[in-house]
Length: 167
Image 1 (cartoon, rainbow, N blue to C red):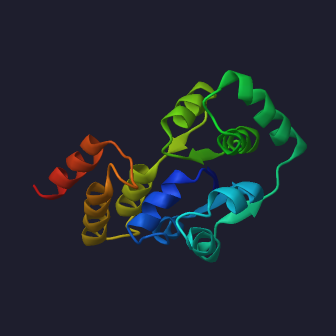
Image 2 (cartoon, rainbow, N blue to C red; image 1 turned 90 degrees about the horizontal axis):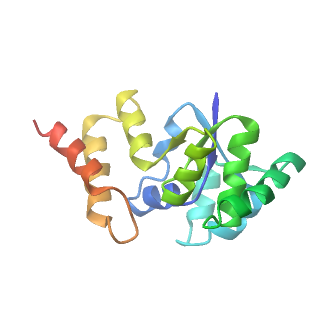
């Protein structure tokens, strides 16, 4: 089982389209710091409970992760404390980071951490046969529908996948 350190925004994307449970079809264990779960998953209402019900694993920070999260602050001023914590967990545990946040993605790349986002999760679900083409297309269409509102994803990435399906 592969572990993945979670940021908040990808979960919001799946929640908005009514598909919070589908990333959990993958053979991954998604982890998130317990304080981030309590503080960042308050909105939209019901997100925290749904994620915990689906299998999001709450983790405590190790001393090493805490120290690294503090060290990352001056290097990446635009990151929130919870962004730095998610990154520190990924670095120390040598696992991927789940995020769509551009500043966090850049920091993760600089720290040589593998990053996966909403569209990457959808691609893995479809390519691995965890969801069928109809479900994949539905998710892409819903992400496109809410893009620029609650969802903030590269429009071109969604469009290119929808065009490939319609050929």
